[in-house]
Length: 117
Image 1: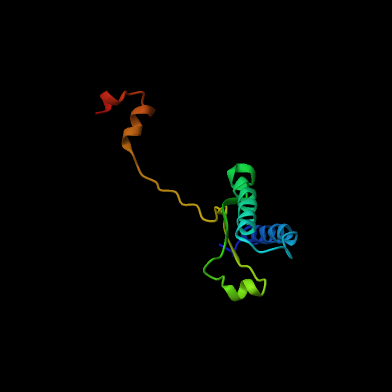
Image 2 (image 1 turned 30 degrees about the horizontal axis):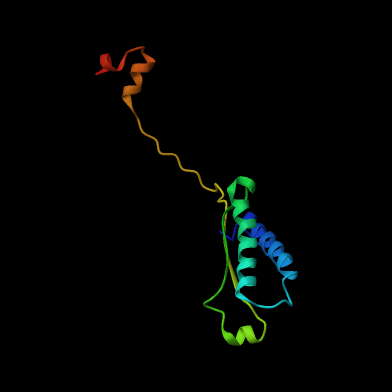
């Protein structure tokens, strides 16, 4: 999906917005309460955008990356988060299934369905 320009653009905008928001959280105590506050704030913003407020975004999830995080990272002041998102898809290829239905001749000839049978 990232071969489409709109998906790349959506990713860039999300990255910039989230990084800008996180700038004010830097150099503060790393605690579970702060981690959850960051998650809640960014998810409220992103999920709000998926409720019809943004025509480019159909799914969003921001979470503290507990799998990647370790006590050594915390000691170094390095906190990991993960962002999952889904931009709205593009209708690049459109297929049409067609079939011949002779019953539609009844409408063209003014016949009712019971007479056509």
